[in-house]
Image 1: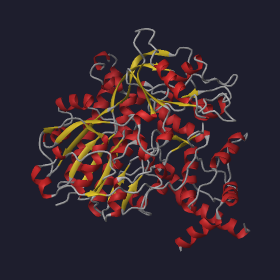
Image 2: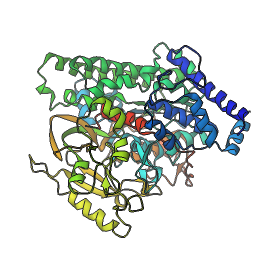
Image 3: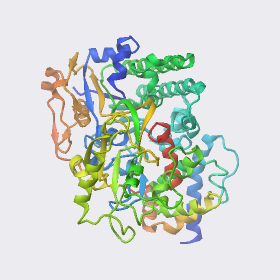
Image 4: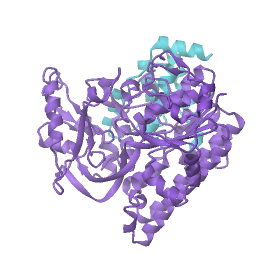
Length: 105
Length: 532
């Protein structure tokens, strides 16, 4: 997948997050290095909802169990937005994503 | 003429609590609805649990068809892994989707399994386990959240799930915390009514559904302050204050139902609960029993305690079932504290001690019979009243997702999945837990007045709602049209229309939780009294 596409995914994820963080009285920039739990005070259910929205957006399932299990093994259980985007990039079904994108236009 | 329909859900409501309150004059609106309409006992699903029961009520199908048996479901038929359920797992169209397909608008507020929201004409504010931080993402259509924020009472943090609120209950309410906790639920119900009446005023829907879930939560945590047979034992001043506060909740709820009635004057109003409620007097530690029977083995040193602290609960509870069970030696286990289900481990490479397909029927029969032999050491009473196999209890394409065995306990309670040296323990004070007998009340211009009906099943509600909306009733619905609730002249003027079976809804995709997220939901379940 091209860098451009990774940037597109990042932009879409940031748009999604920016749409909700303003409801939390969160101030400050959000970018690829932002940590979902430490910086945005996510709870795990928030991650699940975000995952559901990503699946809905891209109209496909992603292998979240393995991904979350990897996070669970970490000494510090956290995840940056960049890692989240990288995960999506690795598993995205390009044809489904293209179809979803074309229908959004 | 067709009627708009207002469905008011009272989660876990039971006549055992409501009747005394109505007799004392604390719930005059509900009493008036009963007097001016038709009412009945409403038999819930098996298990009598929020996700399968509400899904059955709004789809008219049983769990074997819609595929919702609990808060979680097996990843696949043979997997020991479970994942949290979303709207994408509901395999049948709920009434709001059917209404949309036939040009009707719906407003659906606080119902479980409505996230992600289906793209219907109308409004959806999801309920259940929707975190308040992302309520915006759950609201449909886009922009609805911002419109609702303008309402004076709007407070997302109290409207949707906020674990900091739940934490009090998780850690145990101190004497001083009960009253503010109940007050928070009063404010929450107020918010839902403000949203419903606001949307009714500006964009009225033909079908509106609003679920009040404070009833369930308060009955779980405050049963001893509610049950007339227990309240005489309340001696301390703070206990009497809590009793009064809980009573105030029901008074306020009744007034809110009155407000809704006024805004839906010509509509058919249906008040229903997903299940009833009653006391639970003992705890049955099912996994400990399975362990004693040699059917479940924990990994060395990883046996979970029956009295976990909140932190351990938050991080490890459900992970235990995946990572703390020794799968090489386990044959049966109970993964969830909510549905009274026991799952049998199927034999394969990863589960060499599992039950082979050949042995499965005999093993299941043997396990069921042994469960029925368990007795309360104090009273000698049987702990398990009935054991049903999934083939006996469910019909439909999703049966294979059901537990292999579903238990009904003699005290009506829910079993614990934690570990305890005692398989059965008496509770010092009874807690509130689910019962199959819920409530059904219908009132409106086309509904007969002052009629008490024979008991209905929860599957009978959807056909009545479709009929009142003027929509055809698909042949695939598993309930019946309750014609005896409808005024004969109205029924003659608008006989039921039948329709060919509707297609199942194909799941969009799986939304799987990690163990920590599942544990957070388990925290919530514990807060509601599902987990010891």
